[in-house]
Image (cartoon, rainbow, N blue to C red; front, side, top):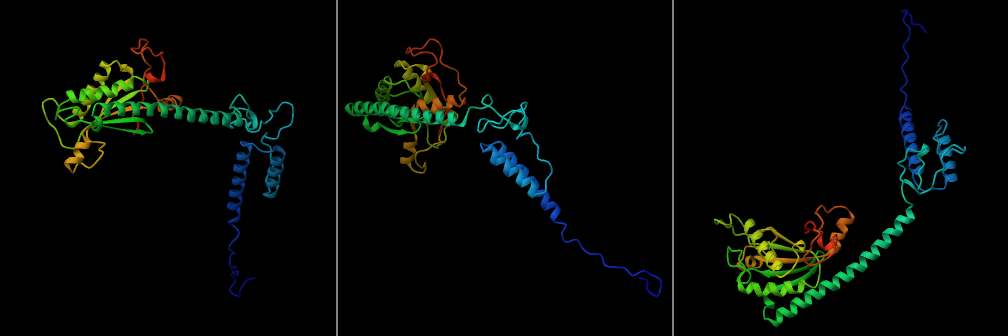
Length: 313
């Protein structure tokens, strides 16, 4: 309708308040496609899944639902429930036993392996407790029980020997006569087992700077190496032994008191659990070489005893 001045009357445009419906519908469609893909990779009832997918597709007003998942002709691959990971070049995401073993078989293997590990843990604990009893009994007989302490941990049996006036003199890595008798008691008991042995040298936090030892790192390594050489002289296979120096990184007590520093100056002989080594080898995490063919104690080549492992704290 025109006004008296000859211009057409302008009408107000109506805002479309329903525009949100389009992206919302797209989002629902994408969610539906995702859930269908998840269902296709899981163990489901095929007929129920087919009915659900087609029903959902019709409800959302989708097009033709034909991904090959429900193919029934003779040339299509039959979907095997729960037999694969879904990562397969087969049409429709089909998977088979050649891609991944059945879930039930995997679970059975895990249960069996866990039972074997529990049994092995019990046997090894009894063995380490026997070593602990031998060391404690012999140390008491010789009157040196107060110079060492023993404890069982997840990593194995830990024998702690204080260094002050027992193993070494101050700023020295030469084993004292008193330390000789203590180490002989420990080394003799270690002959009865074949576990790997880690010898750790620890110091207090007081800095050291001599011509031979510029820091506590070198001193702690030399002390651990001296104990390893002593054990090797007793007949323990070098393939079982591993020295490590930690300086003051792992104190037992605060270094603020003389008593605390005295406790922190120590050597720890760790009779390692072979189960840790076994777990690392099963997971292909150990990179250390196997034992040489000629072994001082005559253990078979490839025995877990000779597979050195990384430190675990």
